[in-house]
Image (cartoon, rainbow, N blue to C red):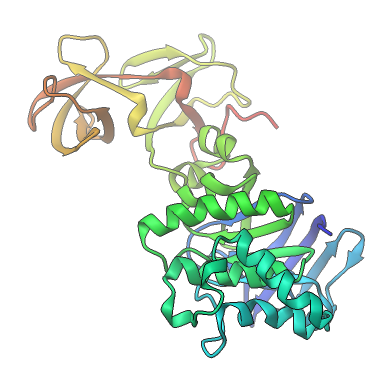
Length: 358
């Protein structure tokens, strides 16, 4: 059975320090929901509160309609996968997966078959008699995932499960986790600090900072319409540029480069523009736009990364598709335009996206 997880006004304190502050979430049944944020933001603490490993100073945690605040961890039907695998080094692969089944007094004649079913699902059945030390990091993580799922938990909790793997294995395991989670159909809460990983695997993401949820939405919404400048700068790279909004004309003025924007939720004169590096058009000086000087350029194969400085001494990062010709050298003067359909407009304090309707 898979469950809906509801958290209402959760609070977690360590002494005088509040690490989770009046936090509420509604995680849908069968979805892969990611808690994303920098180190120390409270995401692992919240995961451990769901698991019952941490005390809860305030708020309510529900699995469907059942309050789990004071539930005995041994009686909760939760599967966990950790970043350090936490598999038993003295057991074979199959014995590791059988462990939870034996603890739950599953009939002996069913234990072996169920363990092999999940080893097959993880594509590691051929390694069932190997010891963990003979496996790669990715294979060990598949063992840990099989062991967590074989008990048919209501919820799967995953804490930075890919952080100890190399780059290629992380990509492979991302795909595997996403496929397996959908096939099994289990509510999954996934913790990571890796923005790309979160966007690749999640149905929805909660971006956290200092124990507070900044935004909850689908990955594409969070990327294209971040709720504030913290989310905009944490999810991918962006340039934050001071600009003015002329309310009568509905026009943005950025270094003298003017363009019309859609209706803003608040009529503020001084605003911040968020423009991602790939959403600038860099051209020769003779073209329309606002002037800047190239202070650095780095060729990275598919793309060339430029750092430019405007006449107002504002530095802007730009990413442009590479070509043999039309590369702008350090010291050259260029003209910049903005892909106006891709920008975000924030209040001057960066706390509100003025294009994001409530």
